[in-house]
Image (cartoon, rainbow, N blue to C red):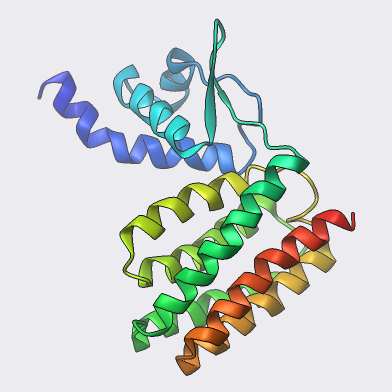
Length: 215
């Protein structure tokens, strides 16, 4: 197998691993994304790591700093407000479009994710676990919209939002509020009410902005 063929097979796996390291905070905002160092850490060649880093830059999870190379992006208060303001509109659209397309299997999956989130509320916050579950919930809804342009844009916005390292995602009160907001979105989707689903999804993201301002 050629190096290029091996890199093509490894690529998606390396990208997922690297993305998770960023979103979990193990690679902190501002951390260098050295291709040789990451290749050694992951036990792979440099080619798939190089491609993964470029994908992270495309998604807005990393930036290319002149004379310093790629680094994990840093999202501050002003940037997170901008990201969430745009995401509110697109999340609402995704929920409205998904309302007409969700199957019973889709609803069962969303219901199961909500059940896990509710169960997790009994435990102390776990940033990596809670971030992954939140992303999976929103990803499932947007994927059901069937709108591929919307899916791509929301994937980037949601990932950038989870780069934010304030206490927005980890304070216990915020976790309970977010769960209730997720449940309202689910209930609207379960009933097939596109307008209610849009309203609930937009309200959820606007709620994040409000909680950010009240810290």
